[in-house]
Amino acid sequence: MTDTTRVPEIPEQRPLRKRLGLLSMIPLIAGVVALDLLALEWRASLKLERLIIGGTQTIPAKEIFSLAKVPQGTLLYDIDLAEIQERIQSQPFIRFAGISRQFPDKLSVEVIEREPVASLNCGRLLYVDAEGIVLPGTGAQRQFDLPLISGIEGLQNAQLGKTYLRKDIFEAIEICRIAQSLDTAVYRMISEINMNNGGDIILYSSDFGVPIILGRGDVAKKLVVLENFWDGFVAPSDAPKVKYIDLRYDDQVVVKWDQPQDRQTKKFSS
Image (cartoon, rainbow, N blue to C red; front, top):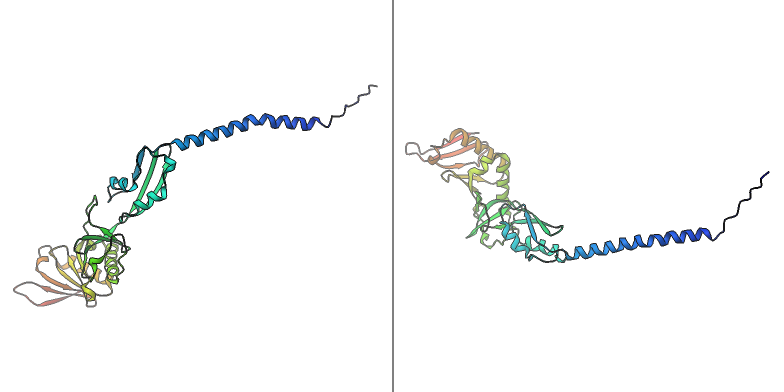
């Protein structure tokens, strides 16, 4: 019978193999660290070569570039994105500007612009958006055909980029919003909203400037009545003959026709 005797393992051999394994990983770890250092050094050397601007419809891209104030060749990671955002958003027409870096040499600027809903009679042409923010009337690369808001005391003190906190401004803006929601034709029909310094609101039509006495309250209902009357009773040739339209009465339109043979005020039910 063969007697096989197993030689016991020397206890020191296991720690030795473990140490050899760790030692073999040192070059790998050193290589990874070296690559990370090289990547950081490469990233720190990147320079701005292009500024990409998107989302502009009203404000020219060259104005956004001027507001950004980032010279070509600036180190990409030395650029303070928050500062650029603040400078661009100082333009009243810019609601929001998103800034991001794009490898290897670009900066992307994506803007969201404010949309004016009316113009303002302030001694100079200004605009206002749905939030009551006052916008400049010049410098835009597109033209706006919007109702004019007038008849508000102190309107000449409106400040660009600020909300004009007057009740009548927001009532006029609400008239624009309701007209747009009913029918864009109704919105386009209005050339001026005269708030009459707190009195009865008077609209003026785009065709021949016909005064339309709106009064106060029930705006949506009155505008529907106006649209039905205008489409049903006022032919293009008749518009110059309308002296005024009064919408202050329930479910009817009071009209004064400027005709020599008939000077009477007539009522039309809606």
